[in-house]
Length: 260
Image 1 (cartoon, rainbow, N blue to C red):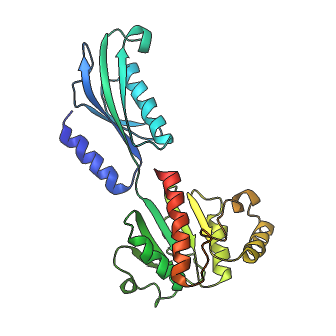
Image 2: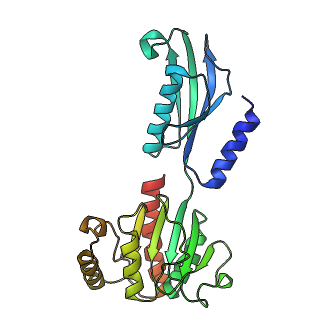
Image 3: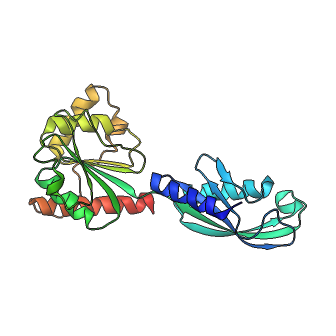
């Protein structure tokens, strides 16, 4: 294989925000199907691009790569004996493979660009560890010039139904909108979704009231129980920046537990 094609494909996948692993032959002894430097790209669904030799050997590398991704590991070096006893092969060679796992940066999606949302977005951006999107229904708040230029700013409609940012399994959703009805609408949309985290600002009384209404509207209690509310780590203080620090502490903790 041409290494340039492999590296180009890896670059494309990183830019697309895909999750994948790369297996690289580091060392070979005896009879081995490929040369040192050969690479394979493995996806979480077991599909692949390129090859390091095929057969039981490659199948084991694919298996080990998927396990690494599932367990949240970043890299590992595996030794494989291409023997009948080990892999049912007759090559009699030995190889070492570097397996590297790649997962995109967490997407931090903030609904609400008011006092708390503004403070939180700008504080989170200073860490440089999130892809940040802020959405608000008010043009004067959903104004990119208010922010530091390191995030996407989206203008949505009053009910938060149109022009919403993408939310997937790599997303951490923070709901801090202008009023209870829009907070409720967003919890209804994202509770039980594939988002890695959903949190809503507010008191325990607000949570009880809104979640009770949502349960009556058909949102499963199991999904609601996964919503973090009141959002943030309790550190005291009611100023927007103090609340932002509280939320960010929880978000970073969750990010490190889920994505590292």
